[in-house]
Amino acid sequence: MEYKWRVLSNTTVATLMSSLDTNIVLISLPTIGRSLPGTSPTILLWVLLGYSLLTAVVLLNFGRLSDMFGRVRLYVLGFAVFTAGSLLCGLSGTGLELVGFRLVQAVGAGFLFSNSAAIITDAFPPNERGRALGVNQVSIVVGSVSGLILGGVITSALSWRWIFFVNVPIGLIATIRARMDLHELARPERTPRIDWFGNVLFAVGLTLLLAGITFGALGELSDAGAIASVVAGLVLLGVFLGVEARERYPMLDLKLFRIRQFASSAVTMLLNALARGAFTFILVFYLQGPPRYLDPFTAGLYLIPTSASLATFGPLSGWLSDRYGPRPFLIVGLITSAIGFLWLATIGPEASFLALTPALILVGGGMGIFASPNRAAMMTAVPPSQRGVASGVGTTLINTGATISLGLTLIIMSSVLSRTAIEQIFIGAVSPSTPFAAAGGFLDAIHLIFLISAALCLLAVVPSLRREARPYPAAASPEEAD
Image (cartoon, rainbow, N blue to C red; front, side):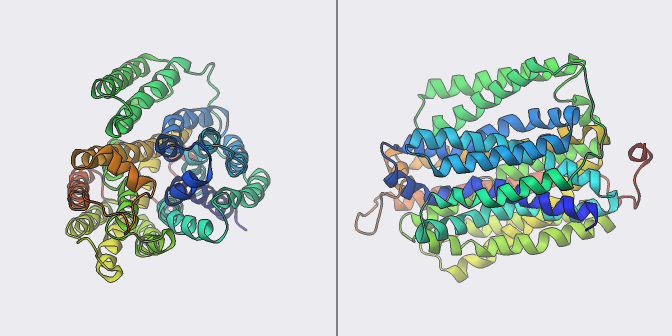
């Protein structure tokens, strides 16, 4: 097999597994809560959020380290760590153990996410990157959606532990194949030292920001504590930017944002992540909560149109953007998703599968049309030696936007529902035999969230209009040839 296709197949398996585990746990949380002793709603929340939060924190650091020490080397390490973390998660005896082992998984996922796009970009010529990254990027979003379906099937047929155990044989084979098949194409940028101060500032600042938003929304922190956490996080991130602007060997090279195509792609990516980050989380609430009360398997089936449309339009959009340039596909994708979100903002309390399907196809298809051209434009815009950190920036923005989106969703829900009511839905404590008085307010909150998602998609069109419209060159640039 030609080397570039070996790269694509291995990295697609990696991103699919990593993204699957973001949401495969979500639909199994009620079962996990009932099975593990002493598992409170707060611990269940950490099982879900800890993975996303730590992945967002380490991505940029790992992208920078890969530019210094070799992308393939750290990618293979990530596969091994992720596989070991999956095994430990399945063996967990308590809720706290599961939280800790999910963090081990997140470290491995961070290495995989931060290096996959860079390794693909190294292996494919510019005029084929959109198609290749389209397959890879679609696997991320398809994984996050299909994780809900697989989670429901595996939990119902076997046990919640098998949502982790299934990763082990696949991960072992993929780790060995990555070690044997992949090799470094970019020269590692061996700088004299690591920007440890910048690493610490970024990790602590982002953690405080995201923790303040999410746990403040759930009442785990007081209003004053949540505000203090968010403000402290923003201050530390501001200090981080100041340090990076003066650092000789920065973790984040701010000069990348002087490249118009890179900056436009980054802003658009963040806005899109904010729009769609809590999409599946909300639908799980809607389908399994009042007044639907669907079982996990049936709820997962409702999301098949989103996954199918993503898988269809993502690679096609990437291939067409290689020929005609990314801009028209970005605009069409964002507007398509916005229409889908506006449609979802009108759903009734018991919308049927057929009633939901057109809106879900529009949202999923729009995501697929947008994702790969935007990532290809972002990666092609930077010098080859900085693709690791560029890949880290992109995935950090996606994960950070998705986590903030979840926090904002919880804030909106907490404005109309009590914390007790939210926890009841979250752990599956409501049922047709226990009437839920706040069902009307719950649906109003969902409508508002989808309206905000539509507005964010339309706002993301603005930076998309500022980028270049020409297609990529058929051959590598002189810089890449060097």
